[in-house]
Length: 293
Image (cartoon, rainbow, N blue to C red; front, side, top):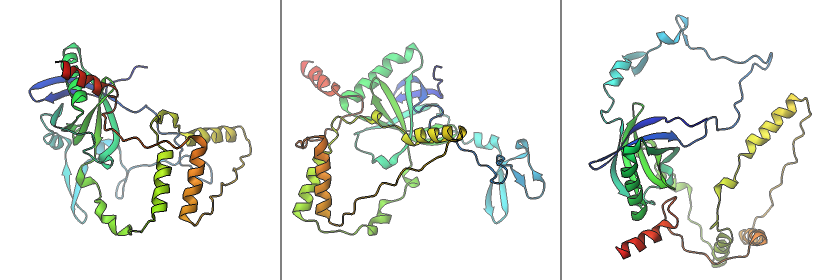
């Protein structure tokens, strides 16, 4: 079944307007297996009903939204009143700034991503122009927008030939790391320990890292467990793996390095390059075009 767009609107790039539609970046139904709550005595499914302490169970059409401004006192907020708060530019992703890929710390990303594609033939050319400019300048586009009645901040990133729109957390929604700084005590490390830690880091470098090789093994195991129980098979828990008892840091580093060297020879560290996702090999082409022009 073909994917359905979850939103339609515009990218505003100064005076340029690009009609786009958004598709969810996650697979429908992803997230593993859902388990239901049951009554232990009879295995009946537990239901959650909305009840009023005075009138008992309440139907959905009699439920309104309210804010408790004092103890036990509420002000009712009507849906029509919420509509008046919606931004007139709710359908626009207005680019506020083009920033470097490493500007935002990873903690700002909330894990939700949409793919933006041109909505109709008229959007193809400006969409491609924006995408190419971002690739060649190695920049991401920051925007504040409204979606589903809520203010959002997002980051547009070139990914292959698409623009990925990643949703961000507002700074006010994140805890300040300084809150935990006193939990970490500065400890002295020897040159031997540091040298071995760097060797271990080099041995475990993932220059050819492929995230698609990682699977949700818990869901696979849970599926097998459910099937086995349906078939009435006895479940035997595997023996717990014992963690190695190492109390010496140098000894732990030596054993870790030996394990890493079994899989691959230690290679000299290569300097990391900051390249926008999906732009590998394109930056050099962009420089060649600039030189020849």
